[in-house]
Amino acid sequence: MPNANRGSVGFQSNEFEQEYERPSKSELKRQMEELQKLGAQLVAEPRDRVKRVPMPDEVKDAILMCQTITNHEGRRRQLQYVGKMMRTLSDEEVAVIQRTIDSWKGASKAETAALHALERRREKLLADDKALTELLSEHPELDVQHLRTLIRNARKEQAENKPPKAYRELFQILKELGKQGKNAGADEESDDDESDDE
Image (cartoon, rainbow, N blue to C red; front, side, top):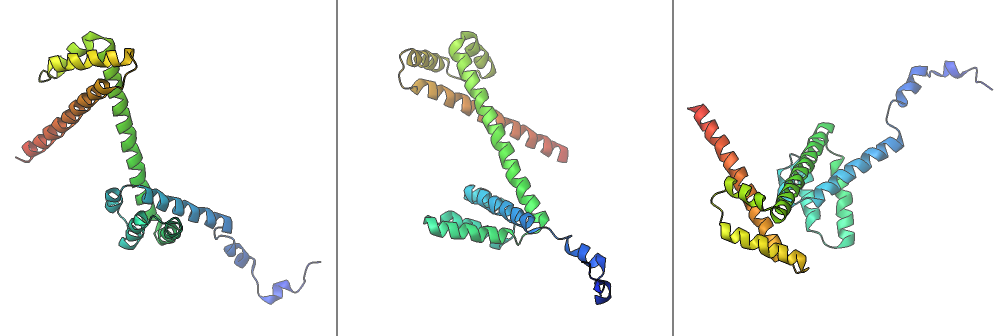
């Protein structure tokens, strides 16, 4: 039965509405779990990466400390503490950290794509002699005899199911060429920058 005196007690309907504008307990719990996961992601990253992430020192210190703990229970407690520290961050700070982690993922995708491209090039070298001619025209400084020997040995390893020693060495040579190409590109960009300054 409705209470006739309710209006006279002094409650106004908009007071009830304001209370419900806060996030629900389950929403708060979800947010806390997301921050906990974000902290755990940072703990799993290499130390030098974590040190470059823009965040307050006390949060960074908690993460770096967690990385050094090997005891299971101690690490679990420190991870809880990292989560607690993550909850002290503003939404903007959390967004910056999330963007940084996302950029790492993008970088690792690019690295993976580059490695796949190298593997395809190596397979081409083993399958087609024209691929070696093409490689030598791009990189005339390479030792032709050494490459021919590696390709021959890699084919033999595959045919006889032997350990892929030459196969791996061929990949390393291609990887080095890729690095040199990147460095040359970076040098050209810095030369361009310098000439712009002049």
